[in-house]
Image (cartoon, rainbow, N blue to C red; front, top):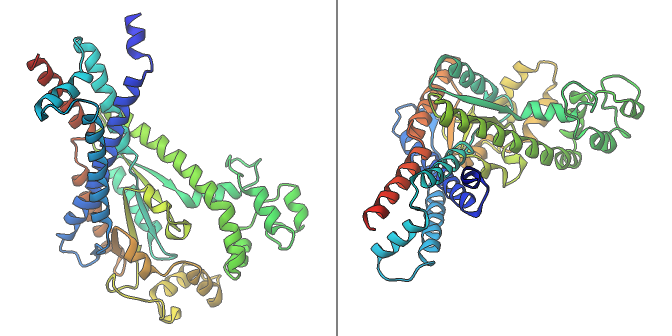
Length: 393
């Protein structure tokens, strides 16, 4: 019965897990937003840029505010009779005469810290034909070669494809299929086979090229499609982030996997998906091309002369110039995205240059996160508090 009561869900267990979760989340966010950016600024590479935005200041202020709220809330529960006495009283609430019971609470808090730290994914985004997918493939390849890089990749393009598949398909998606068919299938031919709207009723497969030709030329229809698919993509993405984050933290804590597990999310349209989306990530890496510096403004330039346009024409030769321009103009200009990202990789050189820059950025991420995770730090703090309580008895 004692064993059952030890592991039974209670307010105490939840409280210590939440404390660990907050600690792990805030520590990881502070590390990625402040210390990573400072580390990357010291690199000599001219292809890695750190925008001068308010990310560091906002993260620092929010982190201090959250920590202060936790401390003030805990201290307010006790009489104000001196700092040392208050610390002892706080320690008393998380200590018991049984070392086994206290160890369990420390382990619960450490598990929460591991989960909080793992649920701070890295986002790689960019513009069409800027090299984002190439950058992600380089990271995945490096992860396979380096045992210190433990990475789980979530591709939003793949999710976007699956939710447009017929519900009966092998992809297991189809969450947006009927809504898209209802919004576009009656007035447009959006199916791979001929047959019009009847093909939708029969579960015909949506042709993404045909659908793209419609939405890139008509902003109203593009907004309609975005309202349908973006919420579904976000829901699927969050579920996978949580799943991969929990799996990674479990493997790290219990199986001793080397390196800090990292969830990498490939997001083609991060800034086009709404303001909330970017706050889901611990760090946003933008892959850009055609910019000499992040202060460049290319909104008024002739897109036909841009490096992005040339690469898109080379990548998709079946698209006309107007179709290429429509796809580029449908996205936020890469210069504006560069102002909002945490880290910008200028993909203006060769593939070897891009690989070298990816290596530098990812090594900085690994060093910033470190091998000593939040769970070990918090566990040590808990034990220190426990022994302090015992000493003051």
